[in-house]
Amino acid sequence: MASSVSQQSFAAASEKLSGATGTATAAQVATVADEILSVAALLRAQPRLRRALTDPSRSGADRGELFRSLLSGKVTQVTADALATLVAGRFSRPSELLDATERLGVDALLDSAERDGKLAEVEDELFRFGQIVSGTPELAVTLSDPGAPIDRRVRLVNDLLKGKAQLVSGRLIEVAIAGLGGRGFESSLTRLVEWTAAKRDREVAYVTVAKPLSEAEEQALAGKLATMYGRQVSLKVNVNPSIIGGVSVQVGSDLYDGTILRRLNAAKQAFAK
Image (tube, rainbow, N blue to C red; front, side, top):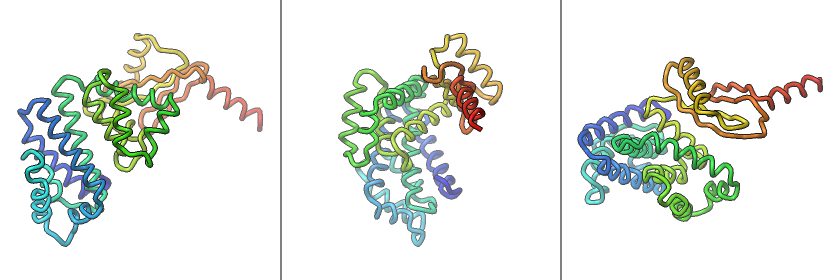
């Protein structure tokens, strides 16, 4: 959702959805989220439909009613109202409608996890699954293969996660498999980790160390970063013995690399000159 007009359209739909689900249970919000993401899958598969729903020659009301008629009897009234509001807005490109629909569905999933008190668990499970994938080349290739049917990759993930993760985590990983906003799988998963942290009003810090940090060391590092960034920080720690020692921390585009490996490489470059 790059343009300001698409952001305004998303904000209107998000407000509509929030108002309609204010007293809903976590399960009810999860159902709405699943419906929205199913519609996103339809839009992904139907470029002509995306173009028709973002046609600037039609009024917003006409586009909204067209979409409502297509959804009639297939989704709940709450979902239909939110998506009709979204489509009635303006989008610079048809792809922005798909991006906004995906984001609306993801936000609803995160809302359901928050109402269930499971948001922190979901964030941790998404990150850990990403670590498993990046550490298993064959699995990474399989899940990232755009030529492999999405449903086959989803079944593989469901088999891997069965009984080991929150349902919301599994559904979000499915979103990553489909390619959030046209991204690859691992990039999509990273974005979902960051959105989940943001829902908890936290910044994500990716930490690489040669050996595991103690609980006291993690708390001290989190506290220092929180002071630097003015908000709570969610540490995502990756143990990589190849860095030899020290620590590397990345927060957004900020990289603090204090690893011994970096110092050795810098020394090699200096001697080579």
